Length: 443
Image 1 (cartoon, rainbow, N blue to C red):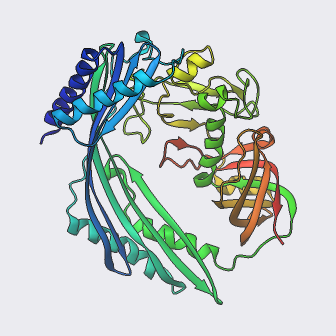
Image 2: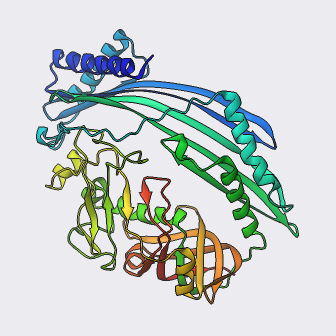
């Protein structure tokens, strides 16, 4: 079925659900419908391991009877199933407690002029071509160095789909989107010690993916670099988070200013609006309308228009991350973030990662993190880590079996520099992040 026809069919389903909700007495309703399809292939040691054609579909309905809310969903898009789903949501709502903050978004905030963000780029890859791509990727990695002795495999994923959102305030819109990726992980061995590492590429447009050969080579390079790793003695030292793990550090900040955590007072950044939490040079902003952006969206999961805005300006919290419900709970206005953020950018400095290492002189470069030792209420941070020990601005040896610890409040305040080696593969785009000091626990 053509994309336009699929969009029309889903719009009809959503409109049907909304009409049914009104007939059953709902004072308000919203519904979302989606269809997605794609191909996933993985190969290991030159042989196909898995191949899966996947297709999924769903409709989710939320209804309101005054301040009482009920939700239900189904993967069956038939007329009868849709009717039963709406009826189930209505039954739930009638038995729910009243919540003064529940309800549809303010009509004034709904997206009216909807930009085309160029998010749909199908990859018409046959199963045979996907297998060839995965095997070619792994082959480069296995042939890179004699110390590459095994593989965890290479994989190719394609996905495209259509999603439609509507509510009883008159909003009804949908658009297609795509997302594709190639990844590889291999194992190296030296003197009886084994290490593994990986690399991946992801994009909405297959033309913007790194080549399979490049992905395989980077996976192998990273694996070889880790051979000979050893622990460190416990110490306090500067730490640089490589760009690919620095995204997680920014993710902790985003979680701390997310509305749900704030109104529950389950965040170390409660009441932080207008307060300085980073050095003045730090600028973190959301840019939802980047063409082809992994996190780009013209509106959020409520149909509220997304817009570019600062989260951190001159080191100060400029905005929380709010949907309509959390905004009402906090006495504020939605920021168009129902469902999450859309392309968070951290402005880079002038130095690449090598430049940051030279400036730091002596310290730890972290390239992998393990575990989830983060307490969002207190900001306490403790995670297993691996990476490289640096002296005189040069990598001396790989490091493993250590723990890095601190408090996120102090870590944010002690941010010294941000690299221009920006990792653009995800919803958070940042370069490497240099922190003045953390506790490193080892031998």
